[in-house]
Image (cartoon, rainbow, N blue to C red; front, side, top):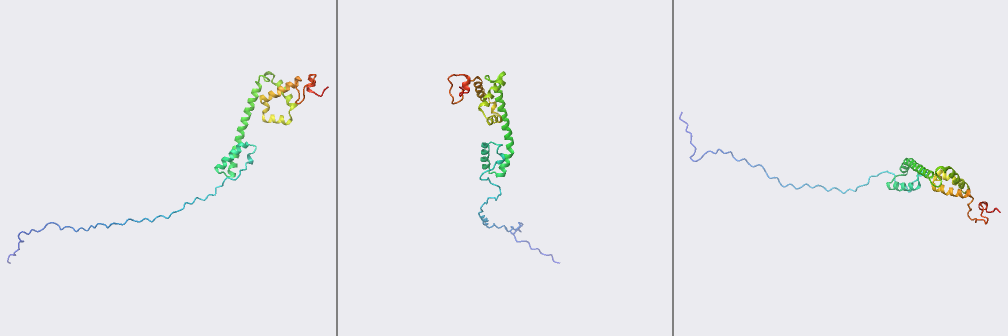
Length: 203
């Protein structure tokens, strides 16, 4: 079998060993248009509907009358109206605090009366060891010129213990006891004796 003749490659021609360049399949993205956000429709805020009670035109504090001073009630009414309290809420509040207010007022009153009593006992004019005797003299003037209503008021309020009030009745009682008191509107008699001064109609 004749030898096979293998043709040699042409001179100057070298086989290429470089891999063929890969085709560029990456394509530049097209410029995307910005997304458009739809504008929100304007909304009108609505105030929440509440059923909260409102302050009445005038508060009724009958339950607190006699327990709380009128000036305090008037001040409280202004505050309740400013806070928008209903009639029920305002009455509930004043009823809950009025007992404590009344208790504090009574304590202050008793403290004041006790201070008057101590001052009367130590008074240099009618106090001291002869306090009881001098109080009887003051009572004589009260019985003569005062009324049962005045006596009750002095006892109820404690003013009967005020040293200046005692002093006034004590001095008036001294005038009565000494016979030197001249009733108002009556001039002194010519004789000037005690009997004519106390009883100007006596002859």
